[in-house]
Image 1 (tube, rainbow, N blue to C red):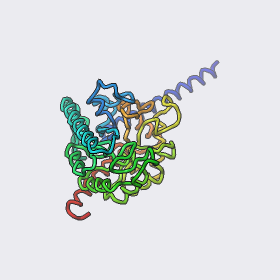
Image 2: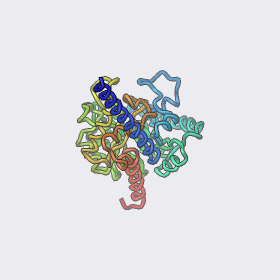
Image 3: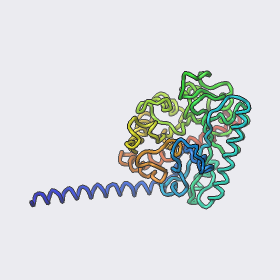
Image 4: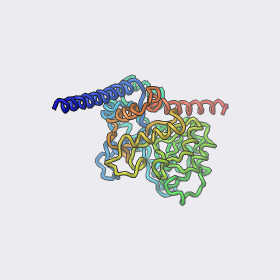
Length: 365
């Protein structure tokens, strides 16, 4: 009996020690999120917040809100204006451009109504300032360059409206480039001639060129043409999950070779083949680990794709961001590596993209 009691007491001590260790990890995670700028480079929440009563959603909505961002220690997020791919006709192009501009206007109205919680950021400097103010930062992005049609001047319109990156395409080809999802339907072999103009203009403006959804040939063309680092706003690793939207190791290496960054998406669709209910933070961390081991910790970040298919068990919405930090701490990530992951790497790429634009303007590039 005495031996049994000793055995039970020892196991209780082990359980207690483990619980304390988890608590300590969370305490460290909270300090990291408070100290460093934390960024999610892609969600689809703006469309939902603009039209909360719509029933035209393919996934459950509501993973991002300013209170949830605050609870999760998330300082900033890129809110994408998502565009379905439509016909490549003048009327359709004009219509979708007007739609995109209206969605940006509507979301600016939403932010104005929540000015005590959030503010719009147009630059890296703005992000840092808004964090110091204790608010959440919103940055606009355009998901699918279809919205600019065949008029390169509309790149300027999107930039002036606040968009700081354009995802060149979505699942289907547009006037800019080939897409990754259906390679047999790709006509350009990468960027179109118009797409080359778009990338050059984005370089001149200091806009990030987002290669999530783009085909391998498009990525390769942009790597040759762009003077700024490459960027994928919400992608994962094809070596761990075979999916045309995921990046191959070679594509990851190309992005890293430009000084770029891969922001890892969180949906089960891109992470595993197991059921959604069994897909956890650890599976997301496996993809982050793979990129870190392949090209180094300087080239990884997070682009959740919340409200567009993102989320796993333990990271169901942005209020749970610290759970990912805990998982990475348990895997041996240092404080410096976590600073880089949560925002440092992306900020470096964004600032370099702006520097390139300044050099082009001076005639040095």
